[in-house]
Image (cartoon, rainbow, N blue to C red):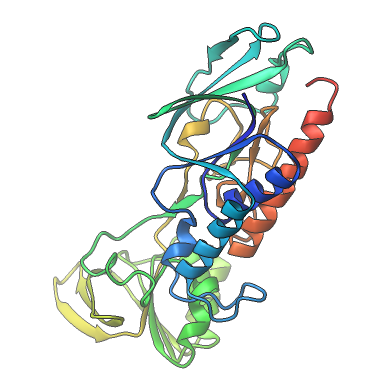
Length: 340
């Protein structure tokens, strides 16, 4: 029986693992892939993490993992398939578990809070993975979020080498350069406005003839002299060897093709939190993120959330690391509750 199982080994999960180990919790980290670090691994350079100026994202991710290894954190490369909830029937006895129903959208507030175990055994969770089942008294969702892809040639090959999904993270590398932002929603327009502060030229490429962003954002971006909106346009290919050099675009109305020299491409066509595993267990917001505060507490007692998977205003490495620490503090408080 574990005290805490952390699902995900990005900055939030690794930070939580270190803090959990320091707190003396019997902890297991489940990581789906062969490498820890999450999205930071694909970042070409990180220059906004305090004390790590100009560090390659892959190297920073490896440092995070090395720190956790140094603390003696237990890792398992396995994919969590489902989470089952129940209560211990008694000390030393097999836990009696009831599989939670998988509903969509996420569960309404308070439902799981009313279904807790008694003081005799307390609530436990069984994490079912492709390599076996693991029982735990608390679960931390650190599964992150994934950016929607264009699925065009050159996108994956040049990720971190001019192709980015985060203007806030990487915009500073394109000062006085020409960049393209792909998308038409709030995030895309906000990215274009943000990049226009430092980039020489910003092309906002949208596949339709009007933006989906809020009117106030549309007005703001259209007033910027160094931003040009390309309507009814899609990117068919991103071209380059060791960096982005140009893009091939196509007008969806006329069918005309064009090549444009480009230094950077920022893709903002959506982001999807990895919450499938927790549907039916916790409440999510209207965008699908797990509803959890700074302490990581969700609507399901014993289930916590940290990092990009939870509702929050800023998704950065530093906020993910802080989330991990705060969530463990939330776990500590949970263990001290009489109801547990």
